[in-house]
Amino acid sequence: MVSPWAMTTATSTPTPLGFLGLGLMGSRMAKNLAAKGFAVRGWNRSAKRAQGLGLTLAATPAELGAYADVLVTCVADPAALAEVAQGPQGFLATAKKGALWIDCSTIGPDDARAFEAAAKAKGLDFVEAPVTGSKNGAEKGTLVLMVGASDQAFARASKVFAAVGEKAIHVGPVGAGSQVKLAGNVLIAAMLQAFSEGLLLTRKAGASPEKLIEVIQSSGFRSPYFDFKGKAMLARDFDQHFSVDLMHKDLGLFLDSAAKHKVPTPAAASLREIYNLARSAGKGQLDISGVITAFEDLCGTRL
Ligand code: NAP
Image 1 (cartoon, rainbow, N blue to C red):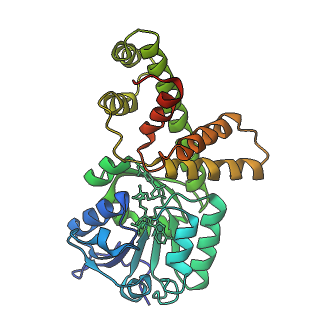
Image 2: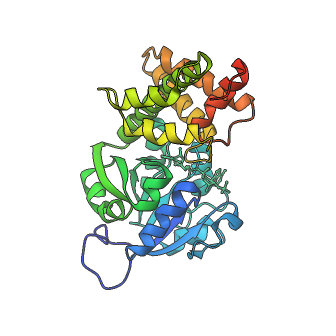
């Protein structure tokens, strides 16, 4: 049995932490946790991707369940999370009573509540902590976490939050973190789409996209996001920070929640179709800034 305050009490032995999902985000978060003194062991579905990270690797999620006082998950979607937690080799079957499970994947609010119930049934504390800040923020340990948890579980997880992020906002009980995260991603998709359409039309009409960016960034609607993505798009660098496939998943989760609550969300619905279009054109594994290339193909102009 793990003490519920294991990480908030000064202790000489490092906390055993299992990290499941060593993708773009998870690999960087796990390295920061190891650097901050947690005894991290990792697991990834594709073992090859996890090699070279400098982490001790487990053969199965179940092996990490038996090892860890704290389990952190960061996988693609709800189905992937169900697989690592509750699948034939899932960690819930072997997890220690009293362990803490922090999920940093982006999933739906109802998914989060269902995982919380499954964790409770096994005697684990569950915290949902989706993140924002992309792979650069994961690398630098400057993520922002949107946490849904009880006050006690939030306090318990605080050292993990501090190791991977610069701010953890306790937004409410489990479910509230996902709700806020999904709304934030709709905003990103909307900003990026309007930006892309403006850049492409500016170019095709013979004006300067560079000047458009200069004007945007000198105005009241400036955002660091437009510098970050604008530079990459002009350099035609569509290397993945956050994939088109994952944004499509998040727009779908947002729309599921909107349908459940009978809230009309026409902008999000059309954004999901835009991401569907990009996926159908084979752009699913590009960064989200690469959606513009699907529109370049349609209008016969390069940015
Ligand atoms: P990623 O690089 O594609 O990594 C996805 C991870 O999920 C990989 O470890 C992958 O394993 C694993 N996975 C997928 N399907 C699985 C399954 N059926 N069983 C077990 N593992 C499975 O994605 P990411 O960018 O790190 O994103 C991870 C999570 O963070 C997602 O929920 C995403 O929405 C969220 N997020 C991402 C960003 C970002 O900017 N990238 C920002 C905020 C939140 P394999 O390596 O074997 O494929």
